[in-house]
Length: 126
Image (cartoon, rainbow, N blue to C red; front, side, top):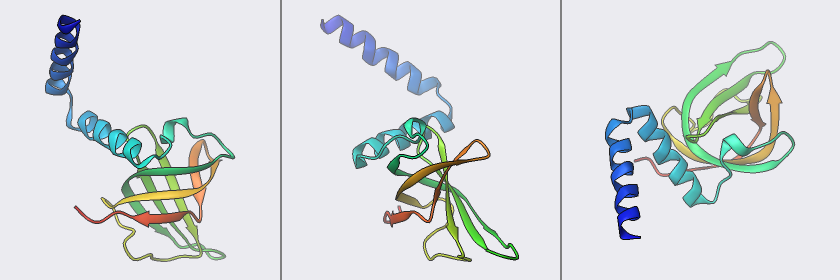
């Protein structure tokens, strides 16, 4: 039994040693998301009310004639969820690199996971 654990830890060490920076970041984000009790974005289905936690990759203001939107891509290590705030130009604290937890009903737009007007909690900056 102790030999099996030694092999597993050695294998894990080698995987971390040879992993890319993106893979290490994704693993860290998945672990932090699980600690928060959030649902992994990769497991979320259309129509579910979910809580996802991760890091904002991009934040884009889309000026439209009838309804401006603020869109942010939240990555949790398993998948990306686009958060869309309708009628907003800017929200304090919503910026690339920021950690947050978002809650809302999952939708799918253009084969991408989307939450419209999510409730959100910003994590303290690191």
